[in-house]
Image 1: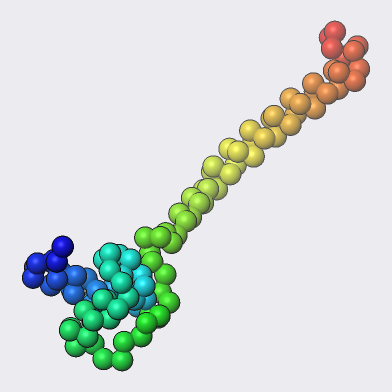
Image 2 (image 1 turned 90 degrees about the horizontal axis):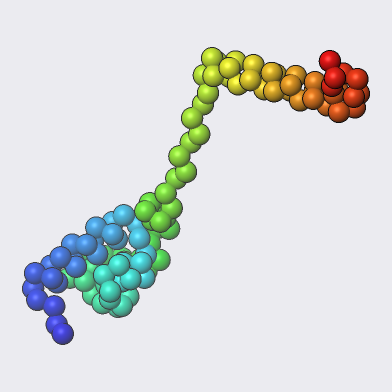
Amino acid sequence: MNPDAREIKRRRRTALTLYTDGRSLAYIGKALGMTVSEVYGLLEQEGVVEIQIEGTGIKDPLLEAPMMPKKQKTYEELLVENLRLQSENARLRRRLECVENPVLARS
């Protein structure tokens, strides 16, 4: 099944765009469903000279999305968390003292 002229033009533009972004011919071929030699031919038709098979090694931004940075806590949030942890520690300390000394548990 041969693609029509419109499809060939779309593939040629897509191949050129991906090539100028630094993608390898194998990557472009996979994206367009073509072989490396077919992609090479498309780029030659577009007038690209000195075609590099491997590209420039730029990673695909969609495949390698950056992690979202964690939200930094404000000073007030840190103070509230610190007070909560201190009260929890005091509660656990009292509970441990009651377990160790049953006389305290009765009072």
